[in-house]
Image 1 (cartoon, helix red, strand yellow):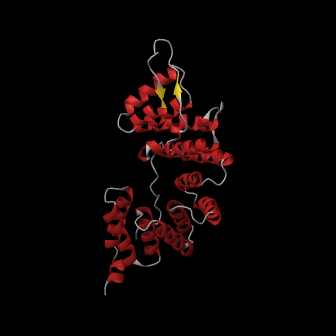
Image 2 (cartoon, one colour):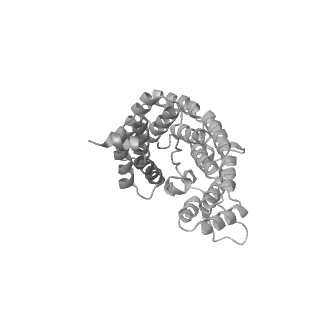
Length: 275
């Protein structure tokens, strides 16, 4: 039978648009040191390099830090390290920006630190350290209660720790307070409910996710898993094939292919699909 326990894909930091990064809040530049009278370091210039030239972004941020760079320089440096595959060092740097004083300037506001905390969660998860991800998410939620992105990030970490009950509590409270929460919140909640054996609630919440985003591969993957578990092999196959059609190169597509292969080898499922 198809796998009952699948960890949904995380939102990798390196896939997030740099233009929306908190380092761009306000107009900031560092005053160059001696011998750099013509130079000026800015968050915009550094972040613009992260995706296409992470080595250049790392070197730019380090130079900036050597000449009085502030939190914006540290933030850009961390994002560059993620692109370069050093997720653990990046996670610690982002974590420190969120949790360690001094907090000064626009990049120290609760809203900006919450964004950095989500990035830290994703980096800790990429480094295989979900406990640290939960810790920094909890810290940030204490300064930014009810933040949807933080709650969703924490839920991803809790699922990595195989704690679906905590996800049901976390995201159940979120959607009760904010029914307009995004598709990812409902997908993660449905996944956790399924793992807890709450299939009726899981079906309800994955339907809410698909109402928000009818072509969301993670939602379709989860709906297929739920359908298979309630004996709807035809519906499961339809969902998983739709995942392949929408995003054939994605993580969800890899899981859908695995499930389709298992389903094809299951004689009971084959009988159920026969006219």
